[in-house]
Image (cartoon, rainbow, N blue to C red):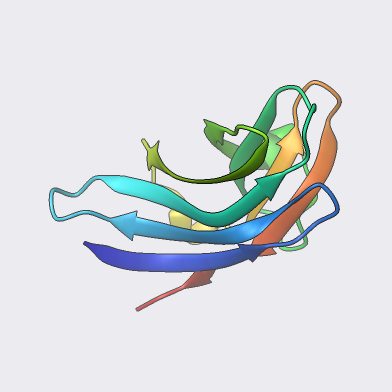
Length: 110
């Protein structure tokens, strides 16, 4: 297991720590710790984005997972990392209302 990147998500409706991990079998996981998402929001997602400042735009994001609300920790499988070099941020947002909840810069490890 190897951490390939980290990010600290900060925002008014979501915050926490994220690590992108490559397992020994070559699979990838997004590990969220000390995470919080505002309660009551529908359709909350975490995505990769090519935008360096966390602007949510359908043309530059890659879906990772739907998120629960409240405080939680969890691992979410990532089924694609083929364009990971282009990804700049992790964004938490509500798809239904296209509302930004928080984001963080992806810090890639060597």
